[in-house]
Image (cartoon, rainbow, N blue to C red; front, top):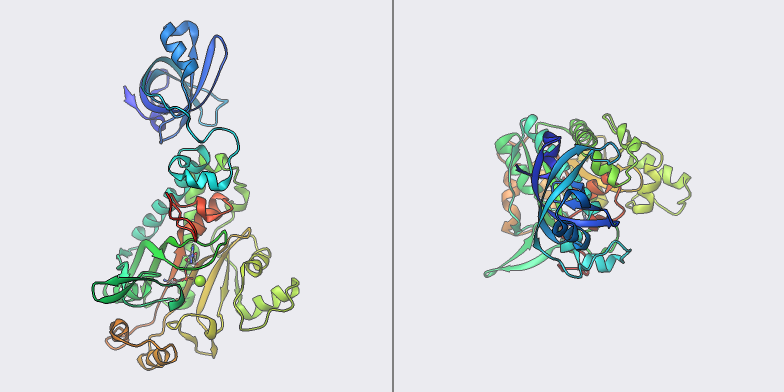
Length: 430
Ligand code: 4AD
Ligand code: MG
């Protein structure tokens, strides 16, 4: 029976055939232990000299790392392995012998591994990170589908900027100027007026000269947008969504979290509701924590966010930032116009901001005023004004950065390991 490693629990005490690669091996004169992987999982194959032909035992003894094969054997339960099963091998058919695989079990530097990302993805740890990423994607679709959202795909080539012009990737669009999308939000607002509750999930681009463990040049964002939903209601949706994602990973990625040595006790209580702290109070809090030179009106940097997060054991919303430091489309707090109805969600354990969201300006005159203040001119922005002209309603939305969320949940230090092929300030290869 031809199957995959993920399916072997169905075949206890039966013989199966699997296409696999050799991850690692140990052998003595009479027995060889092959660490096998097939993409769906990892399993140990045990080759006993007396149970196979001389030829197969020689092959098992000499097979090199990342050689490919079809391997046949009987599946048995094995309580010592984290996976719970192993294979008693009866036959090996070599497909290709891999000579001098560059990534060996010894330690390699990060730049070397990044240069070999196309191969590094095969390793157990990288495999686990990508499986966590995949579960977050799966849970995202489930959450929004179950809650009646429509997925809408905003364009990637745009004529306008949603988050300010300094970080835009410019390109020519025949005779016009175009930019790679830094957020689908403006289009998602149009979509919310057509479908009520919508979400997007796609790549976004920021030409940021930041070289931190939280910044990618190309990253994936989930952007829900909801008509007739105010800021407070949006926060409730955000905390339910993030809780659902974390609990789904805990439920469905047990082996991966174990491979990653993730302290899951820190994730178990990530359940709605999440605490909220106003920007005003957060400024006071970071001052108390020793950052005496920060002034009201300044944005928080990574060390400030970490200091705030340390006070909580769940993600925390920092709400109502100064109007000055936030995007043009955010709705002012009706009680004081110097702050806007917005929130950033800060992950625990120093992973920083994972969500940015706000209620949007729905008043046509105020939006026109913002256009002037921010110098937003030209046809690229005209259509967005019309959303405030024809049946404008209160509406809110947010954007969750996939890679930062993966980094936090998987417990990975740097976002470069949370996307298959990272685009970094000085990396476009492989
Ligand atoms: O806070 P941001 O810039 O918000 C927006 O783009 C809004 N238009 C979203 C919306 O309301 N629809 O980005 C949202 C999230 C951040 O919280 C962060 O998780 C992630 O996107 N992000 C990045 N992730 C990796 N690398 C970067 N350079 C990122 N910039 C933002
Ligand atoms: Mg932000």
